[in-house]
Structure formats: structure tokens, C-alpha cells
Amino acid sequence: MTPPPGLDRQDVRILALLQEDASRAVAEVAEAVNLSQNACWRRIKRLEEEGFIRGRVALLDPGKLGVGVTVFVTLRAAEHSEAWLETFAAAVARIPEVMEFHRMSGDVDYLLKLRVADIADYDAVYKRLIRAARLTDVSSMFVMETLKSTTAIPLPEAR
Image (cartoon, rainbow, N blue to C red; front, top):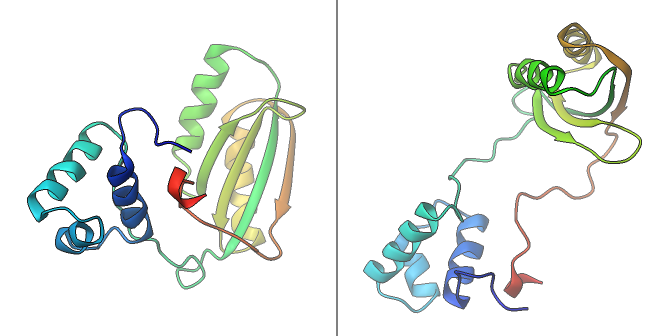
């Protein structure tokens, strides 16, 4: 597969290295992709400016931080209007336990991924959700075991 428009193979290799470990020094990345340090730094800056790199973060251990329970929540809206969505989306944005929030096609309207400490913690989030807007159904699924979890985007060279 060829790189997406605006990227060449060296860009893709830089992205692969940085998404594996964003704390790598520019010199290390430059050496790995056979570029000078300055040329590599300019490419990284361009990738940031063009939005290919949205940010750099540290991945934390949720269990050690007391939020080791992952919950997926499906929601059905009581209405489908722009005003309802704006109100609900604003309320969900204020709930720090919500890690992901997706509008879906199919049988459910929204899918949320939460990180909580326990069922009581989830119940508090549930109560905030049902206060936020009218819903016709809220279903929760608690993760028993995570078999794969990654933040890495599949890149052409990595497939």
C-alpha cells in the first residue's frame, strides 16, 4: 500500500517510530530513517502543522491510577434533534470518566467507553448521563479481560 497523499515513505516511518514512542529524541528518529537531524526535525514539525501528528501524550496505567474497570455503554436517544445532540454532547464532554464518545449507525445511537474504579463509580456516571438528556435505553457492558488494546494507527508499511 502506498502512503496517503502528502506523505512519503520516510514520513510514514517517522510516524511509526513516534507513535511507538513519542519520547524518542529527534537524533534517534533521524538515524532510524536515514535523515539528518535538521531534516528530520523539519519533517516532524510539518507533520504536526499539517495535523498528521495531533499531539504527544504519556500512556498511563489505569489500574495503578484506580480506574481499572472499562465499561462500554450503548445509548438510544429519546429524540433526534440538533439541540438535543448539542446538550447531550456538552454534558458528556464534562464527564472525565468518558474516554470515547461515538455517534453510531445501526441499532444504537451512541457508544461510550468509560474508565471507572468500580460499579458504584459507574453508577454515578450513569446517573449523570440520564440527567443530561432524555434517553430511551442505556445498556452497559463491563470488560472482563482486554485481549488487545493499542493506540497505534495502522500505517501502510506496518500492515
